[in-house]
Length: 312
Image (cartoon, rainbow, N blue to C red; front, side, top):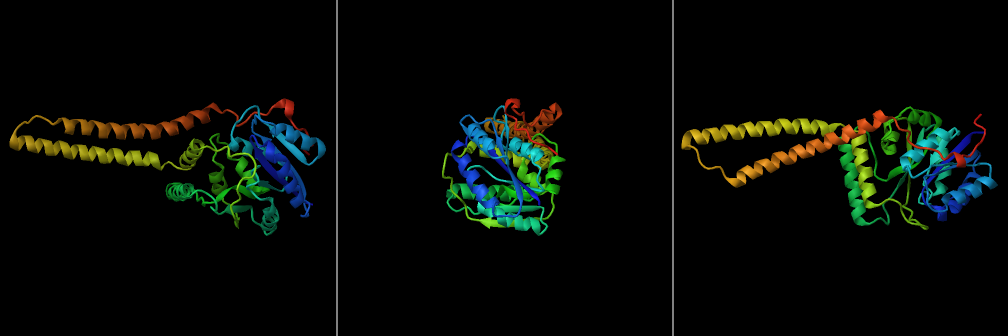
């Protein structure tokens, strides 16, 4: 009988751990698979770890990893991929916005031979501004990056063992899982579902963190900003030479006149602004190169809270 692994990253979700476990077991007991549920405690500051430990003591199919601090969801996903033993794994959030009722449909897609079965949610209930910004972001990122991302498709998905092994071959520290899922390719099936509003607790994603995450998505799979800086430099150089030629012609025809303050300050600000933007783009890439060369681990496991089980 095949083994299915459920990966559940959690950060300050003590109110939802018991509920997500109950709903998962209800769905998993109805399918012909062995299963394990792996909770990844991402340095929670509330009672999330205590709730997970209670479940692990009661049920041998509950496994867990606990980080020494909050390393972020990307590190939690990577830790889960390295730890799961299943023939396939289902990644889902712990806030119950990813409905476990879709597990059976995902497994059907897996049995049909798909290596990725992705749950795509609608934007029902989301603020209109957020819906607009999200749609704009996905159109932007798909137009300038080398991967194809769909609005509404997130981390909630089933991935086969082949897909897991492929993801583990990608060793970069600055990870953007949505892009990595797309980058590895492999056969894919999409399941649509209505947006589910959070019942307990509050979202841990602030507006600033969403912006930073969006920037990561653009930078991680894209070198076009560097090429844009290259082209912009040539355009500015051409315009500058044209302006110099025009100024020289005016001087030769009318003589020297006092240069205008507005013209001078405008030229300084425009050129200075372009230089600063270009340096900022270059800085983003150089910073990532710097982080990669340090080869820091993506996460650290709290040894005192390691859940030991047979790896064979």
